[in-house]
Image (cartoon, rainbow, N blue to C red; front, side, top):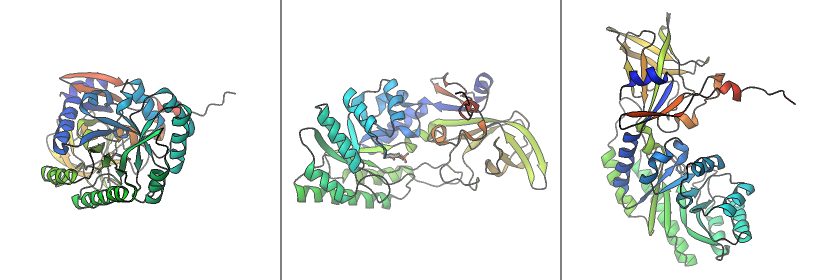
Length: 384
Ligand SMILES: Cc1ncc(COP(=O)(O)O)c(C=O)c1O
């Protein structure tokens, strides 16, 4: 990939999603979690959904907006898992009346009520997973789970299984083991007490990504242990939900040096991007150095602080890095930003434009989203 050429064509700041890398990555994960199926959590990156379609079994969709994106991309409704903590009545009604959705998650008694009401109203049998909480705002308690198992209307609802996700970026296989043991115990309890088999376990392990220089992680070993645990799950079908680990490595964020200065605290470079466009999990004020590359002709090296274009002291991208001497126009490439950066960044701050997004595949680039002016979003409209 010739980043300099891409920058000439598209300008910075710029997101590049490398689709060949993405497909290699998803296939690597699939092989490692086999025989489990893979569910892509759309929230991590909505721009690569279509690219990944033939490689993933399902999509976890957490809002009406995510549904609309997938629907517009003609994603098969049967591959959709309509998840998310806030499913309002109109949304449930719209989905049940218009589409044959693969799975709905029940994450509250209100979801249960709406899903029961509209499946009956439209005389449709729907497939659901009940999400069991890990003690946070997501999912239902064991008591509510059991209430549903005892009381649901079998004519309109088919309970396929259980969904469980407790958090992201989990390095500890011990923690995953604990969670899987808990799921297994719960599945057995439901079998023993209600003679009810939960055929599917859809589990989000929060597969981790190593974002920072010096991070040490034996991913091969991690997946080996994970695979043994997956095989121990007490269900006909196991599905693994993942967002971050699938898509992070495919994304690059490219930003250029636009100003340079020096003061009593050292060298400062200002780039045309910023923390409004990048999210590195666990990074506060760049205490850790993310994986980055620099295109610069500088001969000697020096120590720099790299700041973005937001007028806040928080907008630090790199702190005290020893790099080639910088000139205006030099290019920084921040790696592993494929997950959550374009969807989770504080992108409206300071009314700076949203970057272009390009997909890069088989040596060719394609503009998939142009610049968006956030000044139009942040504008108070006084028209009557
Ligand atoms: C239910 C559920 N599944 C999967 C994910 C994806 O998590 P990750 O990106 O850590 O794989 C999330 C993320 O918030 C989630 O809420």
